[in-house]
Amino acid sequence: MVNNKKIYLTQEGLDALKKEFEDLSKVRRPEVVERVTQARNMGDLSENAEYTAAREELSFIDGRIDELEELLKQAEVIHEHKTADGKKIVELGSKVTVKTSGKDESYAVVGEWEADPAEKKISHESPLGKALLGKGIGEKVEVDAPAGKVLYTVVSVE
Image 1 (cartoon, rainbow, N blue to C red):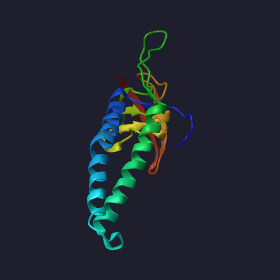
Image 2 (tube, rainbow, N blue to C red; image 1 turned 135 degrees about the vertical axis):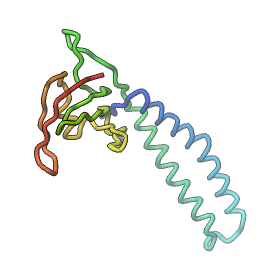
Image 3 (tube, rainbow, N blue to C red; image 1 turned 90 degrees about the vertical axis):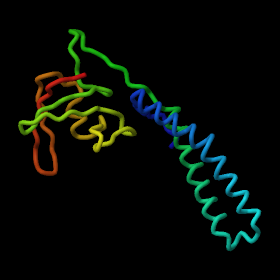
Image 4 (cartoon, rainbow, N blue to C red; image 1 turned 60 degrees about the vertical axis):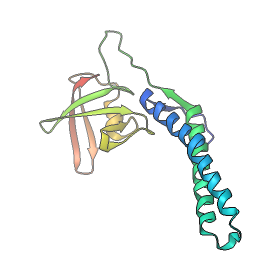
């Protein structure tokens, strides 16, 4: 994962990744290393299921720690901007309310690593996220969806 692509995160998302990194490196990894040591001391490693399971978990944790280190190096926190005339536009980090099919839906536009449709967090690289970027209140966007084209009207931007 060694590239220089910026990873866009909200401050909340960055804090969550830092917390996960700290937990894995300072709490979980030492616990699993201790399990590996204890299992190794039980004797025959070829038939030691606890040793095998602990080594696999340690490998997973080490992989995730490496991934988080790279993410944190490339992370860029999203900051709020306004246009020259003071109007807010949809951008990374915006909370936007749109009207579609007569009902309002609210979304947070976030970087791809934070996207979680169940929590109404959409990636700026998703079809809806891309369509909304740069739009202001009252503007309409049309998005190709599996069910056909869907028309959205921007109601508010925070």
